[in-house]
Length: 115
Length: 112
Image: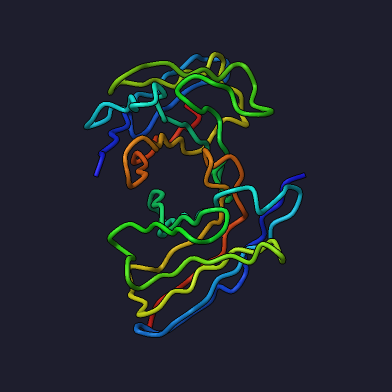
């Protein structure tokens, strides 16, 4: 059974940093591009980042480019999202997902950016 | 960025009723490889999104066949043939033909 379990969320002040993790199981993690998608409270879905199987290629929308960094550790079947210079508009539930068609999603982790 | 416009934003239905949701794109979603990367997701209350349909009309794993997808180019439709209680929630379309991937604004399906 495919499982994606996010962790690392919480309350953080504007301008500070936070790192999210996603533990994957039930599939060969190293064979899949992976992604992060977020959802602000009571809002829709927004793609945040994607990483290639080896980690050599990463992709971001303009809204987070230069502030967020996606990475992975295939030996640990883990995905990460380093978020720097956080803003109030980054407040959201963050989901990790298999990039290919977004066929599997984690349960999400809440990030609140507030002073 | 490609804008996906979903209508209606709220859909009221009775159990057993058939309903449709529209997703219109600001650009054609037909890719140069011949595929159309249009997907449908359901997010039940308090849950993460679940993929229902991929590549316009292909049913995801374990998805009941009362769900169906159709369309081409810029106009797409998700149909539910006989709404069941477990179908309530918010439906999103998503395109992956053009970077960045974008989602529609969502359609909330509620009981009438």
